[in-house]
Image (cartoon, rainbow, N blue to C red; front, side):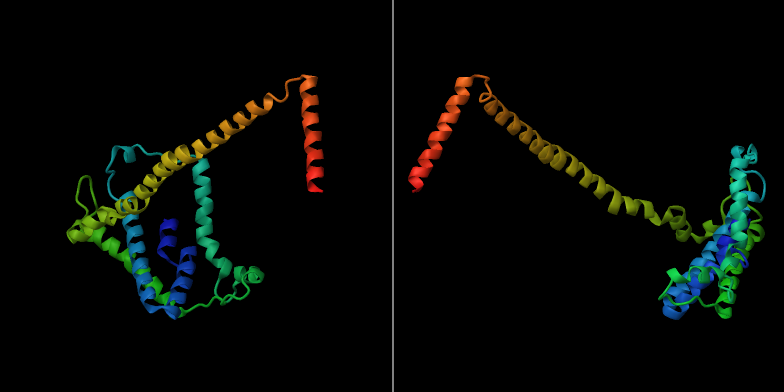
Length: 246
């Protein structure tokens, strides 16, 4: 409940303060973005209200839910700590006190100081309450609670419901634009570039080193007469260079 209300932006929970500052910044900088953020805030609150009702309200709708038990302390204790932070975290930078901002002042130099607008805060709270209230009306009043195998009241939205239920094909679009081209490029680089060019280049260098090693190995034959002959040839070459150079 605390997490849902905080995410919805209900004061004095932490989510309210973070959302309020974002809305206030957008209101001063870009009104179209401000209205889009208000719509997002309404939908977020509606979604969280819908989630609370469907998960914790009505009769048990699945066998797994009916057999569910409370988590162990390793799960519940961190959740309790997160709930405490979600309840009190916003007070760390309470308007007019700005404890967190003053503490981070030396790292925030040059940034615009935070501001608090009563009007923006009131609008954001009304939007959040409107989203939660809409979820209550849709799922508890008009829908008479969602029971087992009963249709979702939002199905009345038709194409909008269909788009939402299919996530507006975002996953499919992401797969078509990002995942599949990336996999294709990875296969090309793996087969043609890595195995074709890089592996052959490294194999060619290894063969070249073996070739030179085979040639130079014959020079190191262990016979003194061979070494003496090489020294003699070297001396003759040096003397020839000196004579011709003069």
